[in-house]
Length: 274
Ligand SMILES: Cc1cc2nc3c(=O)[nH]c(=O)nc-3n(C[C@H](O)[C@H](O)[C@H](O)COP(=O)(O)OP(=O)(O)OC[C@H]3O[C@@H](n4cnc5c(N)ncnc54)[C@H](O)[C@@H]3O)c2cc1C
Image (spheres, rainbow, N blue to C red):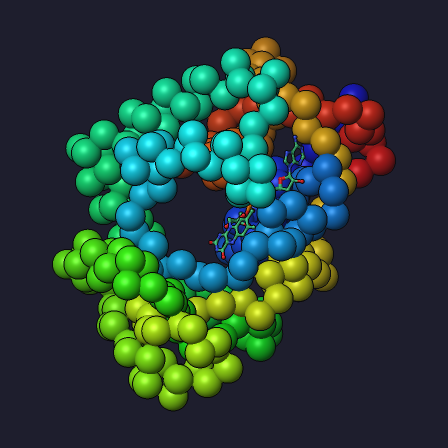
């Protein structure tokens, strides 16, 4: 069996994997982008397209955990668990609870700040280079409130994020109406985050980047990956980057300065046909 000729294989062609693949190829690497579906058919197809630089407080916190029973008991709620799946979920729940500890939380906030700070500018540069700039808009974001209780929560949130450098202001109904006149009259005000951006079409963002990648010579392979194993006696000179979700781990990156040696186990793939 002949061996694949790629410097880097990126597994998962969502917005993360496709951006990584395109960038690495731009840097001169021979890259494969692998996904069991066509690019952008996972979460990146239907996400809200929010470049969430305002979100620096980790989801893993004790107030989220305390809400879980109420969320599960609501048949129309956003969270549902198939109970036969629960044993598989336990290790993840333990890690989630561990991540909610105050010292871990502080580390996560610092990490999110580092990631968020340059992200919009860099994504803008990526889209300008690939001529996809029309898919991004920089109009900021609003968190609206329509009751005194939700206003209080918004103000509490503002007090938590402002010291971390998140640009946010509280708008009263009049100021909000000037900014966004089409909102319901029930809305009493909002938190306004002027520095965030949105993709106007998250799916097209991924397919557009994948097209650029392929048109410039990158190889897209539609294939389910079953497992990846290190086989030191059967070396394949290739860096593997995993960018697909398993529960909350939506970005795994195995990337070493010196190349690492892995063998990818495909199902039904014929290396000679690639
Ligand atoms: C309703 C909703 C709204 C969201 N809104 C936002 C938002 O506004 N802003 C934000 O930042 N985030 C949002 N998110 C989170 C969002 O999903 C991520 O930010 C983003 O889409 C993740 O991209 P990704 O490339 O990591 O994952 P995905 O787009 O899911 O890509 C992973 C890819 O891996 C492939 N794959 C998985 N396993 C295998 C395998 N074994 N072999 C081969 N291929 C495999 C899948 O087919 C998939 O295409 C939202 C999520 C949801 C559910």
